[in-house]
Length: 169
Picture (tube, rainbow, N blue to C red):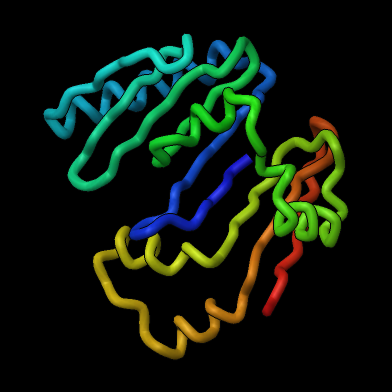
């Protein structure tokens, strides 16, 4: 699952993975973070939050945090509280009315190969911060007409189908 949540300046982007081989996925995420830390000559730190080891990498203005929530789930996020929210007992993405509407519109099933959900309200600041450019007014108006996006993958080992839905205002 990839989730973009609007923020004050730049929205949080969270990637929650429940892969078939979580140990290998965890090693890959950790290896990539360590390689980036070395290349950018920055520190990779680890702290514990609610009993979960959380690694943090800060590169320029971007902070990326990653953790194993449990034996099956790897999370990578730019959000300060995303890991605690996912690990906690509070409301989840599936509890959001906006997400439920978008998931219903696309026919998101209980179990998928994966899906991407974007709450578009915070997308423009993210694009501008990543690109370092101001989005032209006509593009801003077009993107502003979109409320949310959800794309789902399904299929077997030989075939992957992608279907999606774009909700406009």
